[in-house]
Image 1 (cartoon, protein in one colour):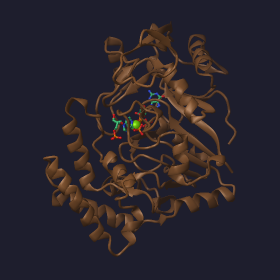
Image 2: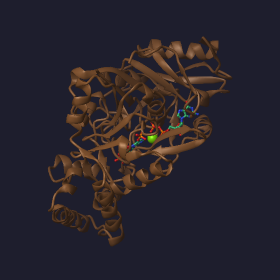
Image 3: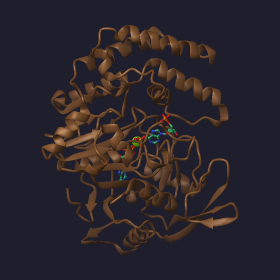
Length: 422
Ligand code: GDP
Ligand code: IMO
Ligand code: MG
């Protein structure tokens, strides 16, 4: 059976967690393929609100296996907290969760290196989540990292010490403090819990599932505009957030991928620094933040808000091969007299509908088209006409059909406009 990939098309926080939770029962397996606890995926059901950072968003669905793939970076401290919370909800997580031996570990010193690097950057800081993501991926590509499977080996402690000594030297050079014993104790408590878990060669497990015709959903973190190659570099995260990342982050063949579900908000947000052409630094932006409760799920930071950015969405659909769109948080825009969409950019004296190479050092301004807003969202076979017009406008501009429309944070608040064959 093929793999379906679900990922964000903007700067993260599009609502991936919610959609994974909604569609997980259609699959046998949900697998996270990149990122780490920089992610915060929110699920709302039975009056509960849960934010997941490392564990896939299919974990609350009976009969669904969840896999943390090799492309993920794991902080044992965060993972332990997540596991304990999920267990406290009566979920037998040990039966449902497998963790890749090849996933790299985030050490306490990675978190400190993240903070030190941001401090050194001063005004041009990335606005990272300070979860140690960049330094952990640097150690992975620099061929220094420790992997989850290494905790099973006898010399794990000495390898940990060797790596943290290197980090301590770097931290001294960066004039930053060394890790304290408390953070190391938390780390080793997390490692202990990880040891009691099922570590697997997830690429083998997943390919076996594929061969036995199981249905797999690959869950992305962050968003395409934060991708290390195609995002607004250097204001990006350190992993491959796009469809191709599902292949390297899970060890599945490109030919196994079928549906690619791209998630976007009916408007746009960004948290952290970096360019945001359709940002609204005015009362309208404030209103979106207020109505959309746009505060980070991981760090609580206020998210920057703006209108939907169509050239960016087209670009994201292109690099991901998006086959189905899911539009989130349309309800947040209810009551706006008019709703805007950035249809082109003004860039280097020209109007362009194509994402330019450099939007960091060169000015890019939005060409907004204003459309009629909607008072409410109702669905009886069709949506109310003003909202339906917005949907048709976006589908035409982006060139992909919107299959799912989310109208609230809850599991049930979803309209399937076009069925997706699974
Ligand atoms: P993720 O990182 O892509 O999973 O998204 P986050 O969980 O960080 O942020 C999305 C936020 O929007 C969460 O608080 C969700 O509960 C909420 N949410 C998701 N879909 C909808 C929706 O359609 N309407 C509203 N109002 N909130 C939504
Ligand atoms: P989910 O999966 C939104 C942003 C940070 C920062 C940049 C780099 O919940 O959508 P990092 O800690 O990765 O080095 O930070 O990326 N960022 C996110 N923004 N949602 C996320 O994840 C993010 N993960 C990282 O704010 O600008
Ligand atoms: Mg999030």
